[in-house]
Length: 288
Image (tube, rainbow, N blue to C red; front, side, top):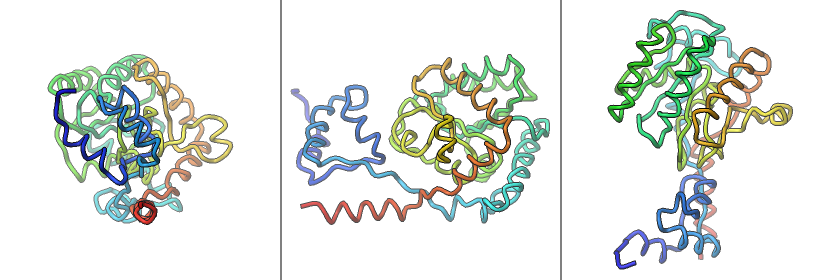
């Protein structure tokens, strides 16, 4: 198209093209996510030369049973100890220490891609209804979002806590202490935080896109019956749909047995690099 693209040349001549999740491999073949390369990518996919392999996580670094950055280590066999991490987060941010309050965690770059605007709008309406929730955010990014987060904190000082910037130790503690992890991305090729959250029994709330679609199984009644549910998903990138998802989460949080079963399902999954490496190994073997 009278322009030069080195990446297009690479995509044409590559023996095989991989991206970081199966769903994202499909998404980049569409107009919305292909950025002008969707035709070529669709063609290569039709040749069997495009696939997605999920990224893995460092299970030694992100391991609740041995994590030195959290207040209390825990595992599937000692889930009760996770509560000590919730208390630690509440105390760290000077929030009322309450076990029956749903603690929502968010660790993110504060940009539109991550759906921060959707989160702010939905949470503002939700907090005004006086629901039993608390929200803790760790991140930095666009000035507008940082400003709006500070306003939200000032409006609900006993329910909202914000740390602008990044703190590795605090990130681990939030992952360990939150009940749910908020990740309503508009697009997310793979995503790691939802996998960290699953490791810590912190159920992710995500939009159905990219790697979020591939790693989170929605808490529908059918999925709960089958024992596969490990989080909450919604389709449309709108604050109204996210708000409705929050109400689903709050309702299910009132059923400890169901919630505990989902936590165990989440923690028993394997997102190690060993799995990903085996898939890459198999792919290299079959390329000719």
